[in-house]
Image (cartoon, rainbow, N blue to C red; front, side, top):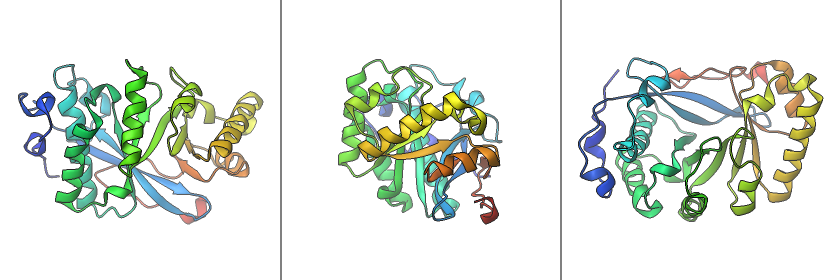
Length: 255
């Protein structure tokens, strides 16, 4: 494994550039996102890990208000660099923290520069925002999403149904993708109430022309019920666990 000097690539505004270098390093695991219709991998989500594959919490323990901006920028650069090193040729899903984005037009520059430097197509980057994270300024999040969409990036709401805003988010902006939270997915094949909720979300997504992704699918029965409702995009242990600094394949027999 090659350790990355994270901060050499950071050239953002004063919130990043004039700060002391990050005192810790990290890497990424990659988990495939698949299309049931096409029976293939369409994207990989980059998931932060310690330099030896330690869980994400071991990295987040080093993040604070003083280095949040730098950490967010470094995550993007490192994930893009590692994806290129691994030969990723699908979409790349990157998580971002709205509270770490000062101004979308400024904070995106480092991402654009990294994509250009390492030769990754910017049109294949998907930005995910965690719906479970409390955003201090809702309008700020709306501005970020709108700015990213204008720049040609796809956007997604992660862990939809588990957080602070829920369907209210969709009243203010339109992401490209909604990722259903695992808590809605677990044992969905035998849980009538969750089935009703997911059917309702499917109808909303059809009306708003949004893609729906079932996240955290672990059982064949869960997958079969969800694909039977017309959901096409899937992510979860049923297909593949996150692989540290690797791009794993998916067995076609699972579809």
